[in-house]
Image 1 (cartoon, each protein chain N blue to C red):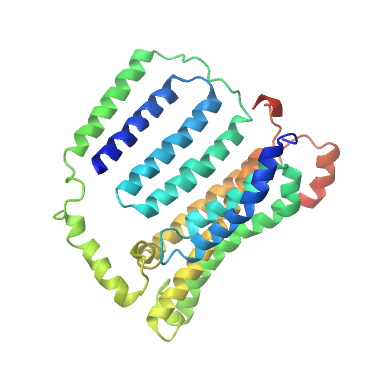
Image 2 (image 1 turned 180 degrees about the vertical axis):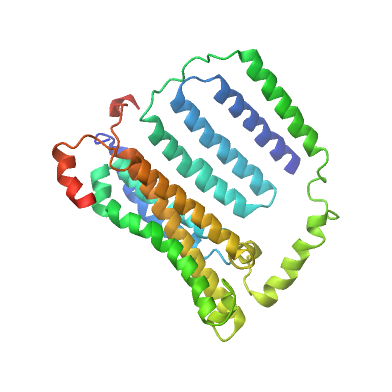
Length: 188
Length: 145
């Protein structure tokens, strides 16, 4: 049953990717990228990585679709026809894809118990979390406590990204007229 | 989007449950899947939905942009502040065990506080980015959608 779900999800993923490649209408492309993220989130659920699936669904399918739509509102709705040689792009895609697939052959099979990550770090966290943290969700214990410093860095990254967008786009809105002139005093 | 009656009615019904769900994800992250990142995004989505379906001016009245920008920094400050508090209490940076008598309780408090900081920053950044993009002049007319 799980293999069947995997095949269906991967099949839809490939179909979505092909549709994204072939479409020129950016609105449809943005929507299909949201669909792509949702399908990936489904795959993560099948792999029992619910926390990752949740993030993918909320961030990938949810907010980035909205932000892409907002970005699209500032540009055109149709993609320009490609100026590069399409054969060249195809060759690059094939080479990179082949390299990635070659890389996966060295990876342990999915769910294998005798891989290094399941021998040292994983069991250690599973054993220590109930004693030291007492939180049922071990993912949260690792993220917020054992790797708290990493997460602080991640929040700092989001903070910096937010500040960068505000600095880049704020104050360069519409030329100060009527409604904006009134607001400018408040916002500045 | 003034003429989309169904969208307006449905969003009005959806926004409160979305906010409630975000709070659930935020404060239940230590028991179930989720945490500050996801909760922050879901929380921001409720406001962004309000801004899209009603209008940017409505959203500005609900959450003024300059207030949201304060929250961008507040979340990170809460997170780093917990670490500094641990230092002052005699532990290592971000060693929550010092926050309470029982180290386990301390860890629990620390995780909740830190996740709250994450949630606040993520939600505020998402709303700020939406403000930044949406307040620029749209080249696509409302009827084109």
